[in-house]
Every structure is written in C-alpha cells, then in structure tokens.
Amino acid sequence: MSFESPVRLWLLVGVAAIAALYLVLQRRRSRYAVRFTNLRLLDRVAPRRPGWRRHVAATLFLAMMALLVVGFARPSDDVRVPRERATVIVAVDVSLSMLATDVAPDRLSSAKSAARDFVEGLPEEFNVGLVGFAGNASVFVAPVTDRTAMYNGIDRLEEGSAGEQGTAIGEAIYAALGSIQSLDAEAAEEPPPARVVVLSDGANTAGRDPEEASAEATTAGVPVDTIAFGTESGAIEGAGRRMSVPVDGETLEAVAAQTGGTYHEAGTSDELRSVYEDIGSSVGYTTERQDVSARFIGVGLVLALAAAAASMFWFSRIP
Image (cartoon, rainbow, N blue to C red; front, side):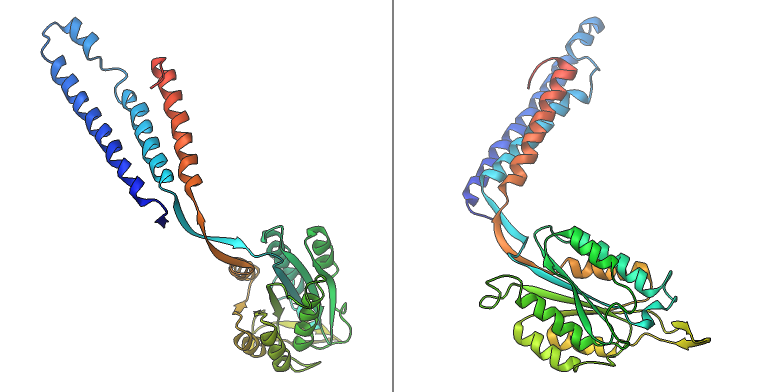
C-alpha cells in the first residue's frame, strides 16, 4: 500500500497527542480523587461505575480519527478487477468412460455439479460458454452472461450428447476458440480476454491433434487450464463385462504446458470443486492500482456512530 499524500499522515501525531492527553487527565483524575478521605464524597468524585465503559467512547473516537487521517492521506493499493468482455469456456468430456463410478455417483454427474458451482462463482459480467465433447465437440452454450442458459446447458450434458464415442480433446479446444472468436462484432478485430477450462478423464483418441489445437490457442493468446478427473480404479459396465477406464492426464498436462495454462488432477468431487475454485480465482482478472481511501473512511464513520451510540446509551451525552 502507498499514499498519494503521505505528508498528511503527520496528522496522526495530533491524534496521538490527544490520546496521550486523555491518559494524563485520567491519571490526574485518579490522584485527585484519593485526596478525599470522606468515602461518600469519594464515591461521587471517582465512582467505580461505569468503570471500563467510560473509556469505550473515547477509544472509538480516537480510532475513528486515526482512520479518517489515513483515508485523508489517499491510500492506494493493487486491486483485482474483472476484465472487460472477459470470457471463460468450460469444456466437459461426455464420453462413455465418464460414466465410471469411481467418483460418486459417477464422473459425469460429479463434473456437471462442480461445473455449475464454478460458473456460479464467476463474476456476473463474465461471458461463459459451454462445450461438450466425446468423439467430436459441440458448443452447447455460446458465451453469454445469462447464467440460467449456462445451467440449462450443463443439465443437457449427457453421455452420447456429443456424437460418436471417443475423446476429442483437440476438437474441444477448437470449438472453444471458435466460440470466443464469435463472441461479438469486435471479437474478430479485438479478441476478448479469454480462458478455456477442459475437463476429461482420458487421452485424445479422436479428432484433430491436441498439439495443433494448443498451438492455435497459444497464437490466439488463450490459456487452456486442464483437469484430469477420475482415478486409476475407474471402470464401466457394458455388454455384460467390466471395462477398466483409468484416468490418463498426459495429454491434458501437455496442453496446459503448451498454452500457458495450469494442469490439475482430481480424484473426488471435493477435489474437483477445489480445483475449479483455484481456477476461478485467477481467470478474467487484471490488477489495477486504485484509491482505497473509502475503506478507511467507511470504517471510521462506523466507529464514529459506535462512539456516539455508546456515549448516549451509557452516559446520555455525545462525546
């Protein structure tokens, strides 16, 4: 934190002087009181009640003055603010392996629930889009600020809702980039600040090469955060037999590294929510130096009201 007018902080010396004077007067008052031998007069001159309460209003008043002085010095600090036209695309794997029950009730249901929480935690002004992918990729929701549309899109994510079987991570990235580039009339000339979050449980088995898609994302300046979701013990039942579908995050890790995104692993619903929270805290923001004097002035005014209330309640007077 820094101050635009640091010289004004010298006024704190005055606040400190008032505090010192208050302490001196309290000591003098105590010494004067003990000179009286008449106990009845002593009780009137230096009553034991209200005790500590008589210092509350003064303490609150001094704290208020200190905060107002700090605010008067125009403090500034680095503040995270949402970037204009910030866009986040959530891509979710809906292939057959996402029906594995190693994550209760199954990987896909858990992924949908966590994605909903993730979207709910983003600033309202963010544009959010949704891509579902299996053997190919489909845009379920184009980037919008309408959260209801996003929630409805997440509800429509089902196994088989993105075409043939497979895991087309590269296609998911291409679909996400296409959504970003068609955000608005300005997107072609001035792309919005954007990020893609891809969740999958396996390696790429269909569609275009994820490495080529990652190169496209890097050129566009769009980081891709990836989440490998599931465990080594994942399995699905089909055609009367049990098929092992262990999580494989090698491709996802490479995509994140190539695009400047982050790679995460989650083996439970709670871990997945934690990953989404980490990602959500970093996407779509920029750091700006802003005047934060209102913080100190606001708290100072609250203390002023508290001092006045305490004084009137206990002593029927205003400090």
